[in-house]
Image (cartoon, rainbow, N blue to C red; front, side, top):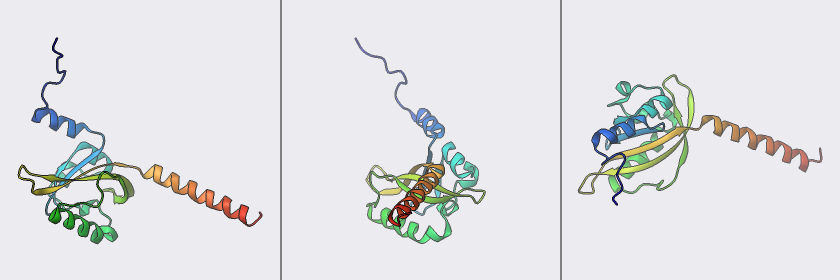
Length: 153
């Protein structure tokens, strides 16, 4: 007995719907760092609509003080095909459209064409600001208690 495939083959319309409706931010930037894909999750996390983000530099979400390090890593990855953060989630600073500072958990991948050439980079992420700040407050409180214990208070 043959099992039926409930969604059929994942054609372009289905793939587009999945990407657009994913709750995580999904961003693709070409080799020049220009945004070419910006899904609904990215709108939710960063505040820029797709129309506002498409064709813009990734600088719209990278704090100014982190841009040099970002671009050094980005350019190295697209030129060499080797990335620093493989199979890892990186928690980093970012910015919302309204100027609010964010912490985001991001995973990265290089996207290659059929011949294996790097055509850009993909990032998938989510806002983790509340968790990051709560963890920081907890660490600070723990340090305070350890200091009191060490000082005999």
